[in-house]
Image (tube, rainbow, N blue to C red; front, side, top):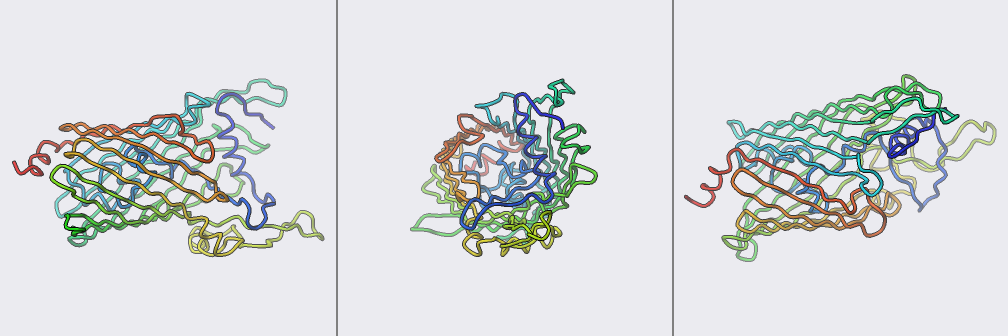
Length: 400
């Protein structure tokens, strides 16, 4: 068996060994830790600094160049004709200095209240060194993953839009090196997002406001495998929904509040007991069989938790965020993300800021963990945006 050493090697090893594990016994008990794991989890990582500053949410926030990730349907409500953005997020910076997520995105409005968009997400897991059992170096390799998206959005009414996104995913964690005695390969799959978005002007406390809500079911796609004979693993199909409210306090000040609910639509690991007559066979004691099709896994995910309904509720992550704009030029953001302690225990505050000037914009975000260490703690991630219709849009909004 090969050993993986040096720098960020434990990351791809953990992911690949999880993918190769066909029937490992789950020793969790009811009411204890029972996290859900999938292949290519990088698909759920917040790619941009605007959302990152608001608790990693975005299903109901106002449309921007990064809407493809959060809710493709929002693109039809984008105020600008065309935009382009680039984001950079260091990863595990406290441990290594060569892991990062890069995100390129763009959209263009079309006639007939339509919009199209494209994005590229690239995740570099740094450099690793493969060695044999004697410590001899086999090779160096830089594992990486990427996803390419194409999105389409259209207004279905004055207040309502729908959107879809198609995605190609490539995950190369070992470069074909043998792992656990098995020949490995890069994983490839395709997936789709289906989303809706609602936006309407209302009045709240005598102030003009905009109420929004959104729903996005993302990463609906085929399972992925890293070996020719190994089990195929679910990708992170995810349900995201929530409301938002943007208050126009006066001519220069806007304040928005948003709430996101997230749930993975993949099977929850059951609790097994070993068959005393056949020690090689595990029997499901609580929960349901996770070895099902993608479609069945989506529906099963709502009622297959071993601890019943209360565990299903634990699987819902909640994110709350706020965004303040002054004169549509300066922004301040804050948010909070909460994940149940039995389902991963990610809990953190976020802070962010933004600046817009003519065609140029920059957003920054910073994460503050509360319960446990986070891959993004003590790092600053940023997004640069370019609005190719900025001058015209600014004049129209100011009435010039």
